[in-house]
Length: 460
Image 1 (cartoon, helix red, strand yellow):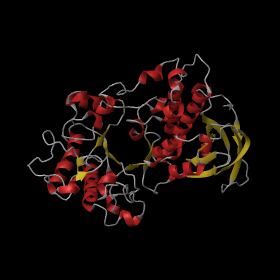
Image 2 (spheres, one colour):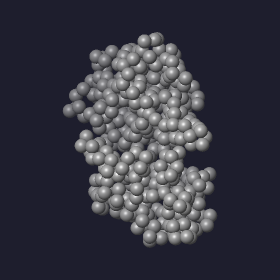
Image 3 (tube, helix red, strand yellow):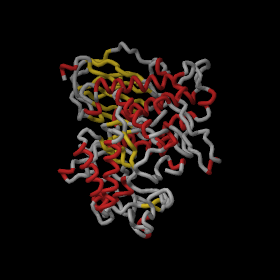
Image 4 (tube, helix red, strand yellow):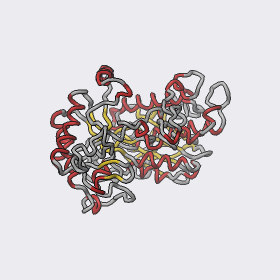
C-alpha cells in the first residue's frame, strides 16, 4: 500500500508484503520463528475494497473502471474513498481466492481476519444503516455475490488447510456467519464482538458510578448460540488517530506524572488501574469464545497510535508502542502486565473459553455487582461500586463445595489494596438462591473482582 496512514487498508498490491518492514524472506522468517514458539500468525486480509490508485494499483488495470470492480457509483466507497469489488466476476473470485492460497501456502499464515465484512455483504455497506433483524439479513439489500464469495473463501481455506482459522469483522450480527457451509452458513470460525469495545469507550465518557450493569452483561453475552465470538476490550478503532487507549481515557495526563511506585498513588491513577483490570477480566470472562488483546492494552499503554499523515504534519512521534514501560520495575505498568499474565494463565488452566457452561447469576444495578459462572469450576464476582464493599454478600451457586480465590484484582502484586485474604475458604449452603440450587456468602470489596474456583473438581 502506498499510504502509510491507511494502516495497510488501502491495498495496491494484494500479493506483496509491505517493504516498509523488510523483505518477503524476513516475513517468512518472522512466521517461522513464531511457529517455533507455538504462536499462530494471522493475516488481516482486505478483500472488501482496494485502493483507487491507478498507477500502482489494480484500479483501471485494463483502462476501464469495471475489470475488478463495479462500474460507476456502485464501485466506489464513499467513506473509504476506495474501489469495491464485483464478486459476480469469475476473475475477481479467482484473484481473491488465489490471494488467500498464496498467503497460506507461500508464507504459512495460520488464518485470516477478514476486514470490512459488513461492507461486503450489504449493498449499502453499512453506511448510515446497521441492520439488526432477520428481514435485513436475508433481504434485498444483501449482496448475494459477496456472501457467496465469503462462503467460497471459507470453503477453500478449510478444504485445503483444515487447521486454518478464519475470523469475520462484522458489526450487524449477520445470521449464520459462523455456521458451517453444509448448514447454509458462511463458514467463519469466529466473529469479532465489535460491540464490546464500543461499549467500553462509551463508558469511558461517563463516571463509573453511572455504568449500567445490565448493559455490560447484555453486551458481553449478546451473541448467537454456537456462533463463536472473539471478545476484546480495546481495538484499533479506539486506539488509533484521535481517540485514546482505555488506560489513557481512565487516567489521562496523570499517566505522565503518577505511574511511579516511588510516590503515593493518587485517586485518579488508583481508579484507572482498578477499573482497567476489571474491564479486561470481565471481557475475557464473559465476552465470547476467544479473546483479543490490542497491542499494549495488556499493560495499560498510554496515549494512542498515530501514523504519519498530513493532519499531524507527517510526524512519527506516536507511531510506536512503548513496550519498555511494562518492564520498568519502578513503574506501575508492570503490575498491570503481571495481572494480564495471571489472567491468561488462569484461562489456560480452566479453559473456560471452550466451556458451554455460562450463566449470569446476578446483575444488580443498585449494588453495582455482577456475578456469573463460566465453566463448572469457576465463579466470577465483580463489584463496580465506587465506595461500597459487601460483607456476607449472598450469591447463587450451581455446584456445591469449597471454593478458594484463584484470581484477585485487589492483590498487592497487581497494585491492588490487599483487602481479600487469599487463604479464605468459601463453603456453599444447600439453600437455593437466584435460580441456583445452592448459595454462598462472600466478601467483595469495592472496585474489585475475584474469581472463585471449586477445590474438589471431582464432585462436579
